[in-house]
Image 1 (tube, rainbow, N blue to C red):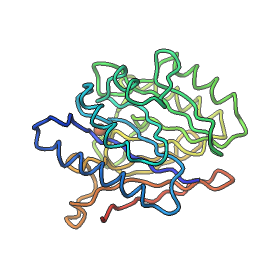
Image 2: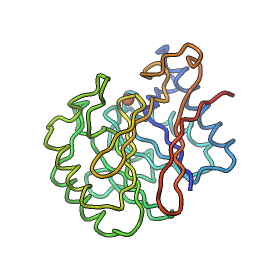
Image 3: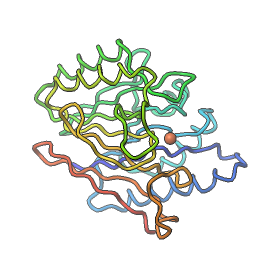
Image 4: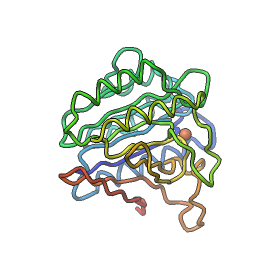
Length: 252
Ligand SMILES: [Fe+2]
């Protein structure tokens, strides 16, 4: 099973005159074309949030148009730049459970669980008691199925970067890790938000972050030779649930 991960595309409305609007559209368009060229094809795409920049319906119209050529389904979770209601309308696969945009996908050999870490009016993450309860019930329902979870805000600090204390209340991160530690079937937590690439041990599993697809806000990829090269990640999942990650350079 192969998963392509996109993150932090920060798409603006098609009518936007901001100078980053066009390049960000091109970055996503090139990633989508590259995913469609892959052989073997990925089974699905995960988007780990900040799909758009302002949260407006026009932003979402544009990101939907750019993602439309994908031949495989997209499962997305919102970032702090996203608007829950407009996001819900744009991504039908994000079939939310009540107030939050969290859900499980049962259609693949590996179970996917989307987590919702956003809170209006702050760019920091949050993970409240209601979400913790939902996650514990969700993971308890399938203890024997290898599971990949995805979330926008990394629930850990990234050493050597400016991403520290990324949750409004640090106790949220501790509580989230405590729940996941009890569920040994979780093989990976895929994250966005920090725009950097990293991997770390977390809650008895592995967690990774990836560079933003939007090159103008990408961090940690400072070689001039890659300045014009969008990046995304590919996660290959073996039958026993082992996840192997590579960064894909879009050199079209
Ligand atoms: Fe972002």
